[in-house]
Amino acid sequence: MGLELYLDLLSQPCRAVYIFAKKNGIPFELHTVDLIKGQHLSDAFAQVNPLKKVPVLKDGDFILRESVAILLYLTHKYKVPDYWYPQDLQARARVDEYLAWQHTTLRRSCLRALWHKVMFPVFLGEPVSPQTLAATLAELDVNLQLLEDEFLQNKAFLAGPHISLADLVAITELMHPVGAGCQVFEGRPKLAAWRNRVEAAVGEDLFREAHEIILKAKDCPPADPTTKQKLMPRILAII
Amino acid sequence: MGLELYLDLLSQPCRAVYIFAKKNGIPFELHTVDLIKGALPVCHPRVQTDGTKSCETGFLALQGGAQAMEGSAFSSHHLPCWTLPGQHLSDAFAQVNPLKKVPVLKDGDFILRESVAILLYLTHKYKVPDYWYPQDLQARARVDEYLAWQHTTLRRSCLRALWHKVMFPVFLGEPVSPQTLAATLAELDVNLQLLEDEFLQNKAFLAGPHISLADLVAITELMHPVGAGCQVFEGRPKLAAWRNRVEAAVGEDLFREAHEIILKAKDCPPADPTTKQKLMPRILAII
Image 1 (cartoon, rainbow over the protein chains, first blue to last red):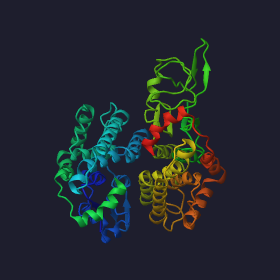
Image 2 (cartoon, chains in turn orange, brown):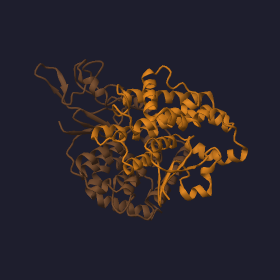
Image 3 (cartoon, rainbow over the protein chains, first blue to last red):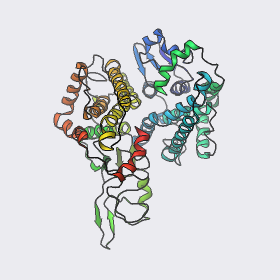
């Protein structure tokens, strides 16, 4: 049994792993774990990951969680082009810096923007107060500004002149609020230009394919009561 | 100018960086950033031959010229310093501070934030023993897995445990409801269990038979609630045994030195009103 990836493209970290594996021609068996249906909470999936999260990588008996760890594992094992995670000490440090920073900042804001704007009201039928939504969008705004000012600055990509793991993680994060209908790139020409460069570097078709699901988030049918009841506690713990 | 590290040992990520650099004999100039005073890097003023005051590290106040900033709290592009306004170094250093966080590494003109990135940079640059970040693909992946997981889980709980149990009431004079504290400690409990069940399991250290960056980051995180008086290792013999192994591998003296400040967190004097007012918004945004 070769490499297996457990993914749901609704999930940002899963999109980053999917794009990376596809772009680099890394062969894998895809197991789709449908988060909306609560498949990640099943006993079967708990055998794969007791933490009940995606993405998960399975390479023979070796099971690995955390998208950043998975991206690095794939980088080292499959000898991908250097620019993804450069050998150069300082260029690599820039990638590491972004990958560390994003967990509690941009990733968090993007997740909350999607859930507060769309998923709670549309999927779960749970209203979100205007104040909560406003606070979430304000926090997103702050982090978008930090992304531009502290990471992108005047470079073509986040870590330098070439695309890297940092750009892949960042762009997939930003597609979350885009899927929620937030105008993330309006009034941010620098970020919009970067976005276009990243999409071109990834390849339009692959980029579109990876983001098909998140871009239809607003059309997500409401959860049935059983599913909702099963999902709510975990969602409230995470969002 | 060699390697410089901007640290406050009150901060968990700073302790991890400090221990790692010291343990591996990596030479660095320490700039202590006193978070409790709300001050940015403490610099050492000197008087130039023309009578003007400047700072040996070239830190500048962007506004207000030569005002005493010592002891004042954060403001966005300021540093406490005696200096003249408008010098070009101010913009260069402002690149370090906009995130207003420690630790920060400065290696010549290269400035790096985020403790995980700093630990990896030091690992690669100084050719430390392999076990810290093994070449072996799967062992390394285990280290990466922990370093990624901890940001939003154990790190978060440990930080909240310290602030809800000690820092808000003692330092800031802000009461914390029993419900909030209970929820925080319950969350800490969950993450301690995950640390044991999902990461440590039956291994000597988190990523295998040897200490690694993962253990260093985890142990410094756990010393936060320990400093707050939480009985983190009570009823957790597996975790307690791991803790002892980590301390032995780091070295007792270095471990004690790095944790002196956090272990005195409960004795922290209350903040004066000005400092409190300046720190509160940022603390509320982070905690």
